[in-house]
Image 1 (cartoon, rainbow, N blue to C red):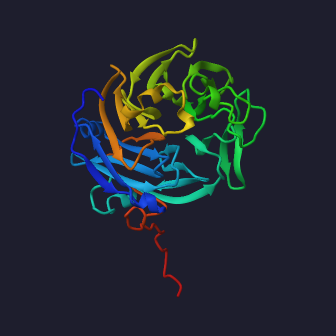
Image 2: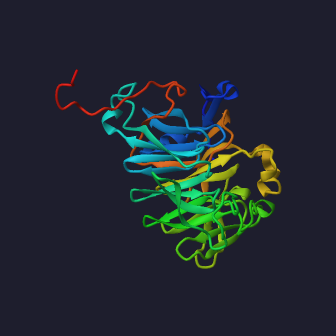
Image 3: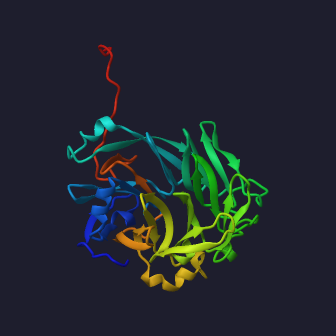
Length: 370
């Protein structure tokens, strides 16, 4: 990406449950501006990787990058609440609770200023959960398999809450590939889909040009003609969307549906978060499958990168980046954890993450019975 100088390559081991992944080494590099920018913003990044099955945590301490990888099978949507984090994975949603009292005690002591511990999971079955967001204390999920927005409860796999106007049946046939979710004033406002299709997998033949943005409240189509769109977002009153098949981030006129390019990035764009005037954009290399056949960005397959690009929205310039060189090929979601320079996370499988178990227990109020 323009305007960046490379740091030295680095690598960390990658643990997983299958034999092939156990041999995978994750190598990465980043521009010289990446760490100072995170430091100045006082923020960390949470990056989910569907293909590698990990949550990647990027933070800083003492002007150095702090990176950790945590295993969540087919990690996809990430939703940040002031006191918890939700992570969509294969067949279930994981919930991590904030434990600030433990942050300073995690090893190495003094590195972390926040801590989240995995506490439970709710089994949904394979609903292909994509982006997620908190509405107060309630988690809303883009349920791609059933072409709807849904919430969760303890008695059901999911509770459908909204469907696009062209969907007539609730069944697990991925009719339109509903995938992205934008929030406004704490409520779902816009979603993205790859086609206005009511047929099982009907989005696939036209995916290169049939994507759309839908207004949830009115069910009206806001903009058409996108190529595999993802991650609609409202930021500073502006509607932005990733026109993923083009490798773009675009600004959308909500009245006319017209779109203007903000920046072109060297990857399949998916996952978008903001801090101040900076956009953090997930970048993926694309697989050699029919899913990406005919998509414009496939013409530049060999030049695509996997990682996170940082765009200054005031200028449209790329100002920093983090790139995976091996071990990770696809990014699904990117979220900014504000006011947190370095967060410690304990995933559901600490032994696979080369991490120690962390326990949190209530203080006994009296002598424990023998």
